[in-house]
Every structure is written in C-alpha cells, then in structure tokens.
Image 1 (cartoon, rainbow, N blue to C red):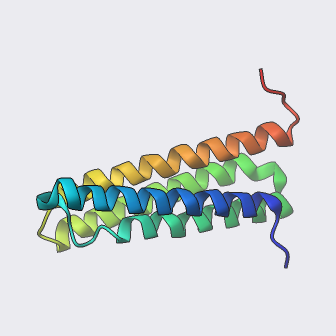
Image 2: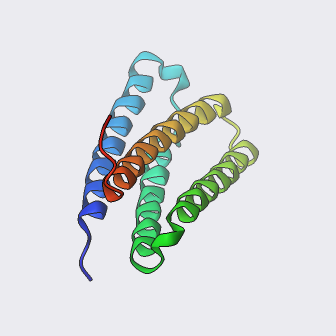
Length: 135
C-alpha cells in the first residue's frame, strides 16, 4: 500500500510541529517555571501526535473510498478528538493529585496548536483540490 503525497506532507509537517512544540514548551516550563513542571508532560505531545496519525489516516481512507463524505469525516475526527481529550482530562483530574491546572493549560495549548495546524492543512488541501485560487 503506497502512501499519498498528502499523507506524507501532513505527517512530515505534523511531526516537525509536535517535536518543536514538545521540545520547546516542556523545557521552557522546566527552566523558567520549574515549580509548574509536571511529570506527565511528555504524554501530551505524544497523545496529539498519535491522534494526528489517526486523523490523517481517516482522511486518507475517506478520500479514497468516500470522497463525498470528507467534511463529515473531518468534523467527526474533531469530535472524537474532543471526546478523548475530555476523557483524558477527567482521568487526570481524578487519578493524579498534582499540578492539575498546569496539566490542563498545557493540554489546552497543545489542543489549540494541533487544531490550528489541522484546520490550516485541510483548508489548503480543499482549496487546492477544488482548484480555488488564492485571492
């Protein structure tokens, strides 16, 4: 099974984004605000990276087998991401007794970063796919 150019581009850019964000935000917190660094920090970029793979895989499957359902799949993946994010936040709030606010704020920052990137990427894809020129 070959990998499409769209999937390669998404994975490449998303990997770079998560590496840069992960290697920037965590060390920044540990260096400048060490009292706010929490042990579970590495889990956050890993969660969003894995979910990025899920998103592009669903998008790619839809593009191949049901292209008329692209918007539905895009919105569904966003809903699934929100659901699992809320579950993770709830589990952390109940099971882990330390630095809940820091975890929530960092998680929210990564959520926004990934949401903005995915929206931008898929907006560009749709614009190029439909042949809409830049204005």
